[in-house]
Length: 79
Image 1 (cartoon, rainbow, N blue to C red):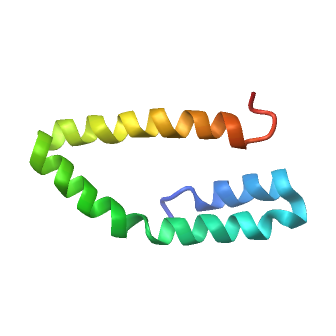
Image 2: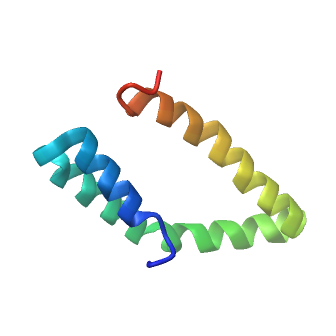
């Protein structure tokens, strides 16, 4: 976990929500806890279907298609 972005995410949530950051921090922790449970099988499926380059491209595309709009919609002041 030390190589992840937990500290930065928690600091950003504390900055944005102040004392109300406890709920969002708990949500991130729970979602991140299940990320490997879901991510590894999906990665294996993508690699089997499209090869490692295709799997990397699919993950990159998902990050752009899902992550950018979520960032714009959910982060106050990002718009």
